[in-house]
Image (cartoon, rainbow, N blue to C red; front, top):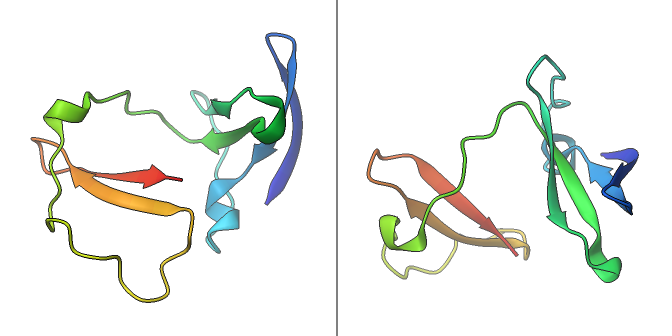
Length: 95
């Protein structure tokens, strides 16, 4: 799931294929694919591969679709809360 290094504005970042990390198929690389920088801080400098990017959402536009229910058993520790936008799309917080 570790794809390699990239130099992003002078910072070396490890690039992760998040789909492979989660046990899925490799992220397909195609025109328009992106490398999304998650952090440039030295301790956790990394980026993920993305087939497409939907953009950012303001927290006020999101709601908790299941209230404050605890995550299901077996949920990975890095998986934060899930939210829904006004169009019904799910958004996952990565901790």
